[in-house]
Amino acid sequence: MQDHDSMALSKIECNNEGGWALWHITESIDALTFLIKSELCPVEIITPKKKLEWLASRALIQQLSEKVGLPFKGIYKDEFGKPFLKNNSAQISLSHSYPYVAAQLHFSIAVGIDIELPSEKLLRVAHRVFSAAEQQDAGINLTKNCVYWCAKEALYKLYGKRGISFSENIKVEPFSLMNFGELNGMVLTPKTKIEVALCYQIEKDNVVVYTKF
Image (spheres, rainbow, N blue to C red):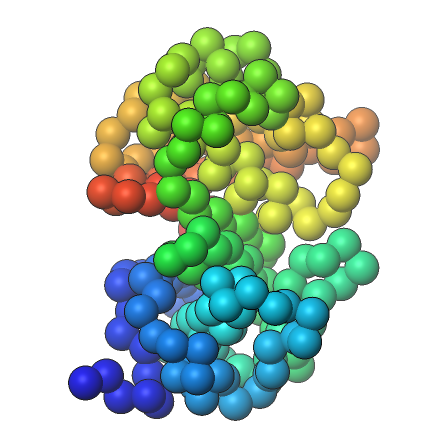
């Protein structure tokens, strides 16, 4: 029987700059609520699945923060919806795709993480979010399309502002698909050029992409 005071992390990797973590949700809403001492789930989140995702993502970033030696006082969001730790300058990113949640933290630089369960709908929307070169490289390989999608989402979260096009302003370089690897991305606007190295890993039922550091 699992102790209600902790979550059994599916995966966690940390170094002296920060870390990232992945969790497969198996707890109940009550169990996750018990874990989070600093926040209550917003009343506007009604459906059980959304509540579980919200609670699990907070519980995960709480555990990740404590793992790297930072006190967790909760999360706030800026005017663009980007999350930050309360009373701390560390940078964070959160993602959820039920029944999984993922989190990343760095002491000083912006980060982005995204997790997705490969779905045929990715192939249907690829032409709207991928450039011609990205579409050609991804082809009809569902997993590779999912890596591209996660990479763009991670870059969007790292950038942290609205008003950019996934196909025109967020670029991902072609890569060779493996079970895990690295790829390069870029956020390019008239005023900004951010080049980012990313890591990806493919599990049996999900894909995760996160900032390399």
